[in-house]
Length: 113
Image 1 (cartoon, helix red, strand yellow):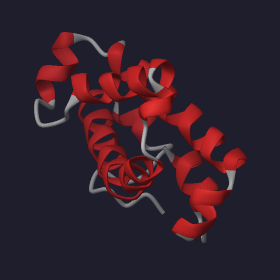
Image 2 (tube, rainbow, N blue to C red):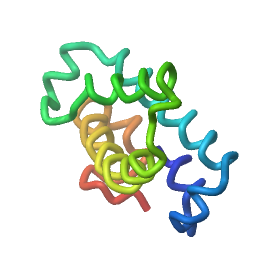
Image 3 (cartoon, one colour):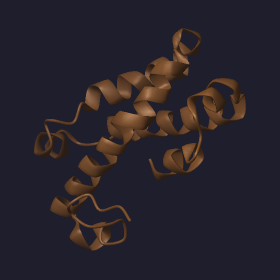
Image 4 (cartoon, rainbow, N blue to C red):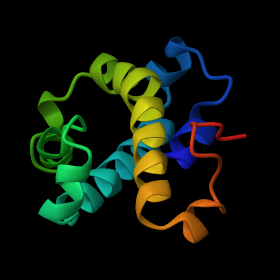
């Protein structure tokens, strides 16, 4: 998720729409996130039922298998709204489950600084 933020830092939507290399890098990271979400245990998922785990994996499947139907505007919106929120949710979950590991990533209140 932080890679996506780094890739898009300072980028305007016009650059996003015209830069195929940027699109590919971001979409690859989104597929990685979706694949990781599919591997999260049901016990862990129940600790954060508000996170749309199945939708995250479903989006990965669309990117991987139906990529010609993916609108670049939808990916842009996902990266700028859903991904920052997901990063906070995942970090909060990590603080609940493994505070020692979570310390490497930021505070339990979403301070990702």
